[in-house]
Length: 79
Image (cartoon, rainbow, N blue to C red; front, side, top):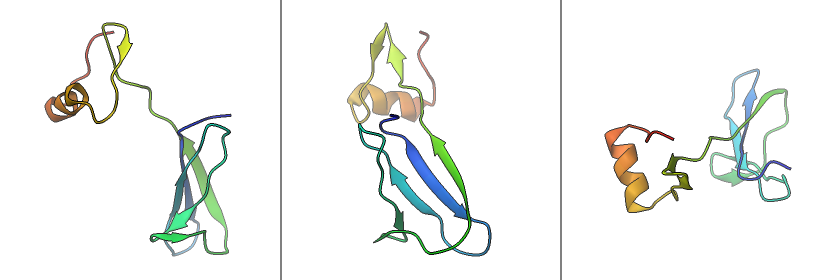
Protein backbone atom coordinates (compact mmCIF):
# COMPACT_ATOMS: atom_id res chain seq x y z
CA UNK A 1 0.00 0.00 0.00
CA UNK A 2 1.06 3.57 -0.70
CA UNK A 3 0.38 5.71 2.37
CA UNK A 4 0.01 9.51 2.35
CA UNK A 5 -0.31 9.79 -1.44
CA UNK A 6 -2.39 12.40 -3.25
CA UNK A 7 -5.15 10.96 -5.43
CA UNK A 8 -6.72 13.19 -8.10
CA UNK A 9 -9.53 12.41 -10.51
CA UNK A 10 -9.67 14.92 -13.39
CA UNK A 11 -12.85 14.74 -15.47
CA UNK A 12 -12.33 14.21 -19.21
CA UNK A 13 -15.26 16.58 -19.80
CA UNK A 14 -16.07 19.82 -17.96
CA UNK A 15 -16.24 19.55 -14.20
CA UNK A 16 -14.37 19.74 -10.95
CA UNK A 17 -11.49 17.54 -9.87
CA UNK A 18 -12.09 15.06 -7.08
CA UNK A 19 -9.19 14.75 -4.64
CA UNK A 20 -8.16 12.63 -1.68
CA UNK A 21 -5.23 11.30 0.31
CA UNK A 22 -4.42 7.66 1.02
CA UNK A 23 -4.12 6.19 4.51
CA UNK A 24 -1.61 3.60 5.79
CA UNK A 25 -3.60 0.82 4.08
CA UNK A 26 -3.58 2.65 0.71
CA UNK A 27 -7.30 3.39 1.04
CA UNK A 28 -8.66 6.84 0.23
CA UNK A 29 -11.86 8.85 0.08
CA UNK A 30 -12.59 11.59 -2.43
CA UNK A 31 -13.98 15.09 -2.07
CA UNK A 32 -15.23 17.40 -4.81
CA UNK A 33 -15.57 21.08 -4.00
CA UNK A 34 -15.48 20.32 -0.26
CA UNK A 35 -18.24 17.70 -0.49
CA UNK A 36 -17.74 13.93 -0.16
CA UNK A 37 -17.45 11.81 -3.30
CA UNK A 38 -17.03 12.37 -7.03
CA UNK A 39 -19.59 13.08 -9.73
CA UNK A 40 -20.41 10.26 -12.17
CA UNK A 41 -18.30 10.39 -15.31
CA UNK A 42 -15.03 9.47 -16.94
CA UNK A 43 -11.82 10.60 -15.25
CA UNK A 44 -8.07 10.65 -15.69
CA UNK A 45 -6.62 9.37 -12.42
CA UNK A 46 -3.27 10.41 -10.96
CA UNK A 47 -1.55 9.24 -7.81
CA UNK A 48 1.54 11.01 -6.51
CA UNK A 49 3.71 11.12 -3.43
CA UNK A 50 6.49 13.60 -2.75
CA UNK A 51 9.82 12.43 -1.41
CA UNK A 52 10.43 13.51 2.18
CA UNK A 53 12.75 16.43 2.81
CA UNK A 54 16.00 15.28 4.42
CA UNK A 55 18.85 17.04 6.21
CA UNK A 56 21.89 15.34 7.71
CA UNK A 57 20.27 11.96 7.08
CA UNK A 58 17.15 12.82 9.09
CA UNK A 59 13.64 13.42 7.81
CA UNK A 60 12.35 16.95 8.35
CA UNK A 61 8.79 16.96 9.66
CA UNK A 62 6.29 19.03 7.64
CA UNK A 63 5.20 22.06 9.63
CA UNK A 64 8.35 22.18 11.77
CA UNK A 65 10.25 25.50 11.95
CA UNK A 66 13.12 23.98 9.93
CA UNK A 67 10.69 22.74 7.26
CA UNK A 68 8.96 26.12 7.00
CA UNK A 69 12.31 27.90 6.72
CA UNK A 70 13.37 25.57 3.89
CA UNK A 71 10.11 26.16 2.03
CA UNK A 72 10.46 29.90 2.56
CA UNK A 73 13.96 29.91 1.10
CA UNK A 74 12.90 27.45 -1.67
CA UNK A 75 16.02 25.33 -1.29
CA UNK A 76 16.59 21.69 -0.46
CA UNK A 77 19.45 20.66 1.80
CA UNK A 78 22.16 18.44 0.42
CA UNK A 79 21.59 14.81 1.28
